[in-house]
Length: 503
Figure (cartoon, rainbow, N blue to C red):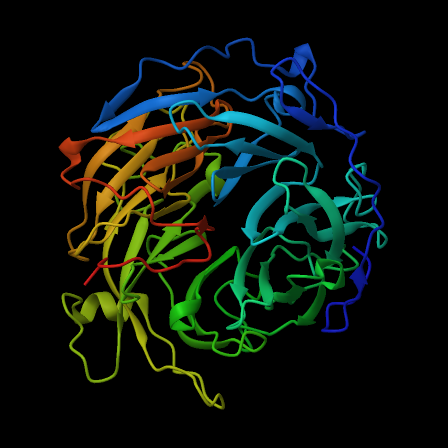
């Protein structure tokens, strides 16, 4: 990562030749690259078996496209998902895949873009696709190789593609960001001509020339929608001027809700609520902390009304077996918080819970800053006990558009997929689930659903090892007929409202 930590970071623009596509056996196109994550026979666990018998309640697996081509190896982890029209865009540590989901019962893989650089967190907005690189690379191309973060010339940041033709993505530019880009979240301008990417990164070290502690900031990248090649870092706001609980190590993920000019950030040891009415100058409204049960604040989801936030705790970094009796029901879970406005009653949160979780102070010096506070209500964790060979913890999910209720579908790695109702913030309850069972009966292998999101009538999951899944929520879940035309585009970390949801 070359460049400074301040707001003067330069844009790394790349000149990329037109992709060269090959035709694999499955008929989809592949954009090849030089450096892939591979495992030889000695590194492939001999105990890797087909998953055990599937367990489910009110959910049905309709289709699966296994990992293939350059993404087939055990070390090529599937990651996040984004949606636009009839297409799903699925991240992988080796690049991303585009699926045609016009017929959810029979999805088709249409292109596999090979561009290594974990995690390849992915978002789309109009003709722009944004990809996060959070591993040091030799350069910003899709032919780069892994490089030590201690090398000043190494590169990490955002890669930007033109998806005006989703079947032939074109790599148009790259932007280097401080400490790389573990995740990013989009926040379009009011007129839609510009989309901002809020870049989260963390884990500075004194031995990393371009990722020095303290690192208490995020990078804001401005992307002109019609000229994405002009993307650049325009701000690096400090979110924790007093250091934060984790001694300024950064944020993991931010969710924007642009209709309400709000954002919620999961920042390692803190959960934050921000006013983003000025896209280039977000202001922290409130900060909460849970020193008893939260280990790693991972992600955030608003309810549709913008009156609640669900924060997730990725205890063990996603690679540990935490859905067992030893860990219990309140660690590696979701924390559900109400957003209370001044003068309103705190609902079901008692004084002890408020004291435990703390609260920050409203932001000052900002003309449009909103006053609000996050008030803890309850924890939610899947009620099933997993084996010690299954990595399981709260991970990525999204709202399901159900009139008058707050309902969410969520990935739990090898804990499967859970659908739960948190309309009553203090008493969330599970109403559906899907679970493949362990990848191995004898050793813990990284696998399971990384992301599970609802999009136009169906749940789509990107399974780390098993590939792309399409699932249906059955009538037994009590959600009624689910809408099939809610979204024209969906990035779960860029929330959009739907009619009649929440209360």
